[in-house]
Structures are given as structure tokens and as C-alpha cells.
Image (cartoon, rainbow, N blue to C red):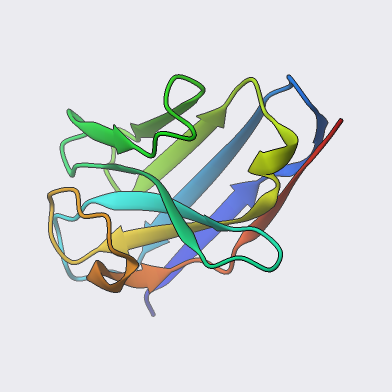
Length: 124
């Protein structure tokens, strides 16, 4: 059974930090990029960041550039998101996703495996 399990998230004050983790299991596709998306209340889901299979290249949305860092685990089936200098506008449900290919793609339709989402809430 293919699964994508997220952990982390929670509640933090503005300026604080949180970390998210995601692990893929049971997948037959051996090389794939992974990314994080988020959906704030009343808004569409949006791209946050993604990282290549090798972990050597990452891409960030302008809104999080310089504050968020995505990294790939040694085993390649996991990815982490370190979020620093959090702002209230970062409040959202964050979703981990695995792509079909190993290069970075932004459109969510390119990702075929999704986590259940984890809540991140940033207060003033």
C-alpha cells in the first residue's frame, strides 16, 4: 500500500519556527521529486516548495523564500520543511506531495501522491 505520512505542524507565535516531515512508503516509482503545498481558509491550494530526487536543487514560492528550507532525507523517500520567521499569513493546512518524475514541477496536477495535510497556525 502506497502511503505518504506527514508529521509536525502545530501552533506558534509570529516570528517562531516549526518543522514538518513527510515519509513515502510502498511506492514503486523509484525516483521522484517531492514538494509542499498549503491551503489557507477560503483560498485555493498553492505551491510552497519542491526538491529534486537528488536533493541538490530546490525551488520556493516568493512568499516563503529565505524563510523556509526544504531538504531530502538520506534514504530519499522522506522530505522535511523547516519554517522560520513564520507570519500569520503562513497559517494553512500544509500538504506533502510526491511527483511522478524526479525534476521539480510546480503545478499540483503533476503530483500523484498526497498526504492528509497538517495544520500550521501562526498567531500575532
